[in-house]
Length: 326
Image 1 (cartoon, rainbow, N blue to C red):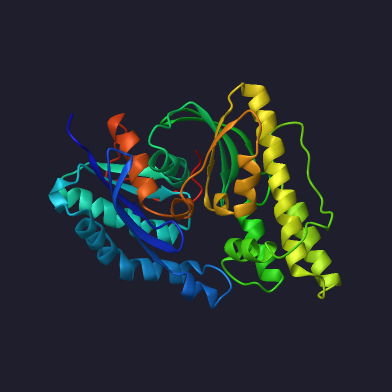
Image 2 (tube, rainbow, N blue to C red):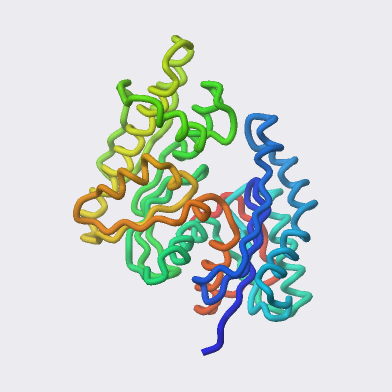
């Protein structure tokens, strides 16, 4: 059987990334140009600045990915690029470049959902992982429990009704003065703290989430008492969030009778949350390598591969969809 090489392109937020992945599972190159240093100056991602930097970086990043993979441009079988969800200007840069490359090389274009990419990061880390399983998606834009029925067949069982968990991490980090990016900074500081502050948890009779309450509670606590121990605050936040995520996945296991679980999205890099999920009883838990939790193009190439082999090809009229759903 012929090997299939997919070029993945990712530009949905503040990382310009390109990757070559073989047969959906083997990374040959994974180049990420991060804009963290630029956006740190503003305390968060500035969409216009992100788009401009994608334009400056994308050509070089793709060339580096080809070079590191030790293949030629013509060896690529398909071009997979993120077309949503994300920042519309940022998405358009990667999508436009991918469309131009697809046309110039006469190779299929595979429009890829960023959320599918985060799921597929697990296929790269765990070579034997196959659907069906349940996914806890936790990122800056999404918090969902998803039933992965097949490689490109999904059912969302529960989702956040307001803030995504990653959004709460970033906003809390900004308010208490930790800066951007919030996730890693809270994770680091929390290691020095104790979970000794009671914070609110939202309970629904289904599998939905809400993180606006805990975010507001922490912001109010900090404003009332700026001398509060930040490490304890961060640890208490992490613990409450982890409990909420774990409680819902337990309910999902009960409902579906599926006990194979994957974590996906940037927040799955959090050390406390990883530890809590690994201690889940009667469940087999998979999680991506840390470098594949945050945005990258290898995950897009992997998701693109499974769309490609099932015949899901896009045409050149494909447009960016900032609010794309799974």
